[in-house]
Image 1 (tube, rainbow, N blue to C red):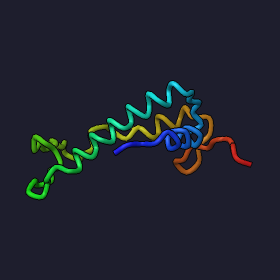
Image 2: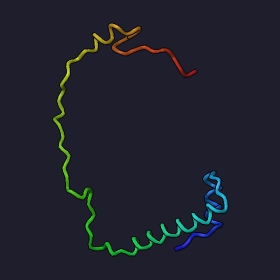
Image 3: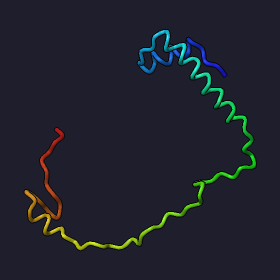
Image 4: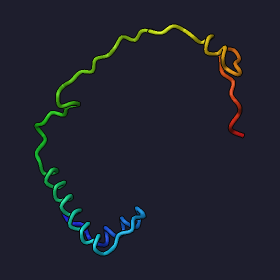
Length: 95
């Protein structure tokens, strides 16, 4: 598969990228090679390949969901400038 010079220039305009004539020629070749590689990958027969979530079948170890720290709300709120009903009061920032 190949990509045309006009396509490269159009994408450059849409992406707001300045591309000069020498760069367009180089990009045309490089992008053509990339698209050829994508075509090769698309042609591979993957019908008999089972999808997998991880190549090593690793299982993530999970820690138990238990509380490990004590409740220190009163201590933290005692040094706060303003609290009410267990909540911190802050200045209004949206008008």
